Amino acid sequence: MKASILPIYPTPLPKAPLFSLPMASIPTLSPTLPTLSPHSSPHSSPNHCTLPPTSLFGTRITLPRAAISSFRSLPNTNCRATSATVSFSLPNPKPHSGATEKTPKWSARAIKSFAMGELEARKLKYPNTGTEALLMGILVEGTSKAAKFLRANGITLFKVREEIMELLGKSDMYFFSPEHPPLTEPAQKALDWAIEEKLKSGEGGEINVTHILLGIWSQKESAGQQILVTLGFNDEKAKELAKTIDGDVDLSFKRQA
Image 1 (cartoon, one colour):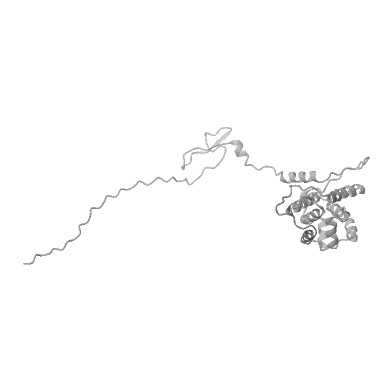
Image 2 (tube, rainbow, N blue to C red; image 1 turned 180 degrees about the vertical axis):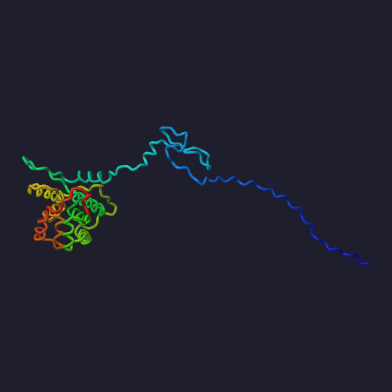
């Protein structure tokens, strides 16, 4: 007699109890954020401004009123500071002895052209601001009658820069120009010539960009004068430009359109 074989089913193991871990409480921001104002909290003092507690940290933030007032609009002094720095670099006009006329000043465009000339000298990593840099500054500023006259005769900034590279070459790549590269002797004489011509005229007004351009042309064998000759500038064009020498006057930057 055969023994009956009963099927054997695996017995299920007892389920281990699941322990629910408590979820960390996530702070939530309130839908309306407090605004920063001097009267945002009853705890504000005359010298401090206290924000109400937030739902994130539950702490108050106290700011001095001096820090709040510092975010207000401040007077824009960058333009005036830049003009003052450049004016110190430019030679000061000194009237002749016994002269009673008012000392002329550099025009706004002349100051800006000189500043652009210094910047171009720094871009090329030259140690000095020469007549070639003054010429580039005139073209970079671009709004004076002298700059428009040059462009009308085919003398552009790109052509001048190419001629400078061919005439003077590139500077050492590891050399860094000073913030205000000093003037070369021809550049200093060009600016002095501009002042002298204005004083000799005996007329009012300012020393403008045309004076600077003609001053560059007066310095024979200088880099700026050689570049002008190469690009087609001559004495006839200089005389034509001199006829409008007193027509390029601007008393302030606001009048430049």
